[in-house]
Length: 109
Image (cartoon, rainbow, N blue to C red; front, side, top):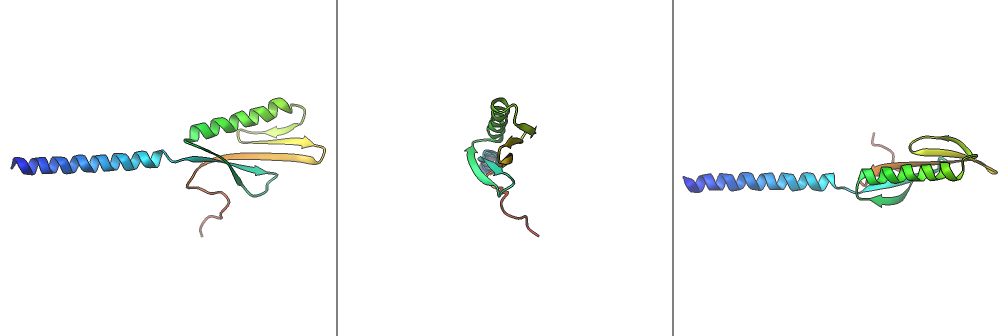
């Protein structure tokens, strides 16, 4: 009887451990910073260990463009900026997505 209790307890602990590990592995996926220049196809720019790091970098990059080109900024948002240049508008958009998502491919039907 005691052996049966220990067997059930070990089984329950094993299941808990497996579910915990599976959840933490899923939560710790890499994030990719994607870049789109002048509305051309998206291209991967940099990988990050988490979404927060990726989004922080995007904010820093947009802030850098705004600070270093204040007279050329036509519009900006949290993930994009458009600058006026001698060749016309220059649009730059960033997006942070988990490494399991690729914005270049069309969504399924």
